[in-house]
Image (tube, rainbow, N blue to C red; front, side, top):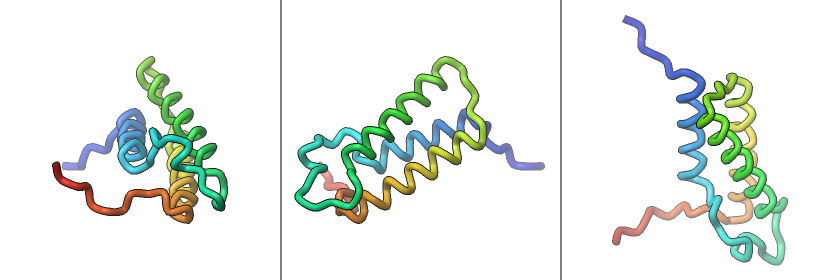
Length: 98
């Protein structure tokens, strides 16, 4: 029996969930802007937040993304992730337990 592959809606939802988990989309701008930075993390995260929110709305209204849509969002998020890494803005430490 063949394994069931997720549809593009489920794949996009999974990608969005991963982006929201890993990227500091809600980080205040003051914490993103330092004296020297590679690229502009604040503007890049604003762009990514806009893309994610747009797709969340589109999915909620029943739109079906193409594989190209998923690939473009994945590529953008990978590039932005690398910029955040260069600027040391990612929380790579294990989560503290309450």
